[in-house]
Image (cartoon, rainbow, N blue to C red; front, side, top):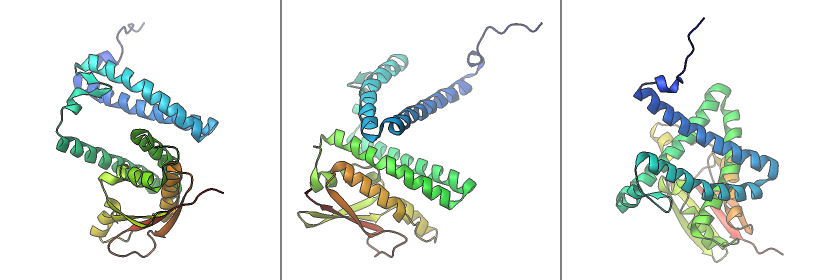
Length: 252
């Protein structure tokens, strides 16, 4: 008869294997968190999903940080590791840039995971649908950070666009045409600039952009209308890759 095993496979791992398992556990947490959010959105709608997301974040962050701080021995202030608070402004900005670049890299590897296996059409379809979900969530998160009112207007939109993940890795600018019309320009796009250096044509991102910018602006203020001035595959001047006009229209 085989001898009974009294220890778990985890306890028989060496340090390198255990460290890898910690990373894998973290990854599973992220996936599970996202699945919860997606399922609530699917079953109960966007508004209730965002409400639940706020509750889960506000309750979950201190629980998780306190547990990790006790395990690893680092102090925490109001849910933020003290080591992060003690960094210089330059180092924190550098960390923000690295996190934003990692976000873009993740977006790219997901796109290619579908493109290489199933083709460009399926990849673009999934990409555009993903932006349809992510843009309102990012707008919601920024509104919470800035304490913006429900209808924040074009001034609120300008503030919010400056806190997007894209704002740390791309170069963007604004032109006020009048009090009710704001033009946003993406002067340097990390993705498109990389393609240009490789001698490739612009990536045709207009379909995704229409979903992305319309959803973001509407989530900041439901009165804002979005118009695409130009976005690849459209021709565009050297000074920008894409440009969008946001107009505030009072509801009747």
